[in-house]
Each structure stands twice: as C-alpha cells, then as structure tokens.
Amino acid sequence: MQSITTIADLRRRVSLWRQAGERIALVPTMGNLHAGHLQLVETARRQANHVVVSIFVNPMQFSDASGGDFEHYPRTFEVDQKKLMESGVDLLFFPAQEEMYPAGFKNVTRVMVPGISDILCGVFRPSHFVGVATVVAKFFNMVQPDVAVFGEKDYQQLLVIRRFTEELCFPVEIIGVPTVREADGLAMSSRNQYLSAEERQRAAALYRTLQTAKERLISGEGDIAAIESDAEKTLREAGFCPEYFTVCRADDLQPATTADTALVILTATWLGETRLIDNIQLRRHGAAPA
Image (cartoon, rainbow, N blue to C red; front, side):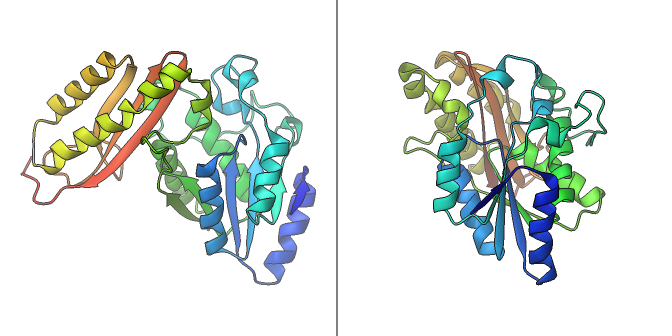
C-alpha cells in the first residue's frame, strides 16, 4: 500500500490505473477506523481493481472547527494505516488541511443539497451536510472513481451524497453498506469510545428501541406518531436525551404515511456527552391508503 499526502501525487497514481482501463473504488473516511470501516473496504475490493481510502478530518463538518469536537476527534493514523494495509488497500490518501483548503475553508466554494440537508440531523448540525457534500465532491474530482462506498449507518448522509452525485452528473456509482453492529446491536462508531462503561451497557437500548418500532410497523400498526412518541419515551426512561426519533420514506426522508411501504426509522440521541445516531430500514406490504 502506498501512502500519499498531495493531490498531485494522488492524480498521478490513479491516472495510471485509469489509462490501463482498471476500475477504481473510493472509501472516504475521517480515520479512527473500526470494523465498520473495514467492511466498506472489503465491499470496495469486490467492486474494483484498486481501492483508494482517504483519511481526512474535515473541519467543514464540525460546528466548531476551531475547537471542541473537531480538536478532540481521535486521530490514530499509524493504527489506521496498519489496518488498511492488512485489508489490501492500494492507496491511502492522507492530506493536510492546507492541501484540501489552500485558501482556508471559511469562504470556499460549497456544495449544498437543499431540502434533504436541513432536516433531521441538519436541524441540530446546520453546516454538517454542506461540509460532507463539499469534501466528498472534492474527493470525487481528485480520484475520479468508478465507485464510492459509504456506510448506511449515516443514512441521511448517504442520501445527500446520492443526490448531489446524480444532480451534479458525477459518473460515480454510490454503494451503501449495511451497518456493522456490536454483539448487543449497538452500531459501530468512532464515538462509542466516548461512552463510559455504564453508558456503554445502556447504549444497547437504542437498537432495541428501533427494532420494537420496526416490529410495530410491520405488524400493520398505523399510528406512526404514537410509535415515534413511545420510542422517545422509552429512550428517555433508559437515560437517553433524544433529538429525534422518526419514521420516514426511505427514498427522500419525508414523513412516512400509512400508504408508504419502503421506510426507514432514524434516530439521533445523546447518552451523557456522546451523540449517537442509528437507523433501521424496513418494507411494509399492503400498507393502508393514506
């Protein structure tokens, strides 16, 4: 595996593969890699001749890029590098902030996806999806991959990326990979390490609550508002502080009705000082008319 830090070197390397007619897959990450990330890499390896992984903690995705969550985000490059090498990655792109944003990122050109970016997590993290879309678009232009792989745990993010990829005519196939979970159902996340031992035990209730809501919907229960309300109550009683728990149409994240069949249940919640997100998808058959 080759590790490079400049856009010029990245373009030189991938241009050789492209000239040879070989497929390229991209897996963008912010590092601090876990088994979920490695599953993305494994999926990418099945889709292309060469896999490029980026590690870049993108300041545009954080509400306070001069401190707080951005400064404390775990940086574990040496460990990440070893994991990627063992996973068969061809190229690791590890740029500095100055390489990605040579004139700074405050007034940089931005990619915005209206509607889908300013709901759910977008309400609580107003600049987050602009930062995601902008940096992923930059990576698409740098690498020009045939395929890019993202996790379904960040379901809203995945839809944002699908939308701008289609609307800006990037010739990139977007592949979503199902969430990788711990034995008790907790979605794997770099943020899980912030949980105390006691919080980590309680955290499993998040997935159980999603499963309960899914079972009620599949059984044909039509009062979606009641399902959402009961789930939030359950989480609060378990010590969580939910931002939202909602049932949406899977294709556009608009509020679900009884007539919709392809659904996704999404939640974002705080447990102590740690913000957790998760979702579960389902398909209902024979839904009642709205």
